[in-house]
Length: 230
Image (cartoon, rainbow, N blue to C red; front, side, top):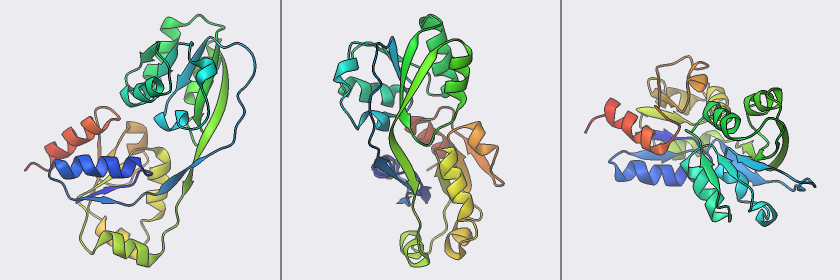
């Protein structure tokens, strides 16, 4: 049994892939996606950076569709394509790889539009600004924690222990850690393998952990198949 903690609609998509692979996937989103009202900055930009497919699902990006896009991975690149962008540069799935990609392809001093969520790591902005790029962040969505009562957790868990818990973000890790004292979830996930999408997430966990090779569903499936062979 695998507990999926990411927000919807991603949680159900991940669960469907795990179910198709033979796992018993249980969905308990620890946060919900809330679109934010925002205004696009004025002026000329040289490129757009996006580290989350969700960031492109609110607003009209047609005025920027001629810009080159730097996408953190394939899923985000697909979202950029769906939003009308054609010149898309795909990084290797992590913040570190998108930073290096931008540095290798864009001149220092370039003005970059960073379309992002309210909850995010500061690393990308700090490093690119330090390298001489001018980043302007536009927050298009927020990931707000969901508070569950005991009855809701009991209903979701169905009384069976989890073999693994999937944590795709630092926020998910923090929220899950806050549920460790919950009577039901704390007991059912006590001995579960904590599957993290980065070493940064794993470093903060006081539990048995495993880190996916890449922050993708494909890598998640490979890791789970390794730890729980049919």
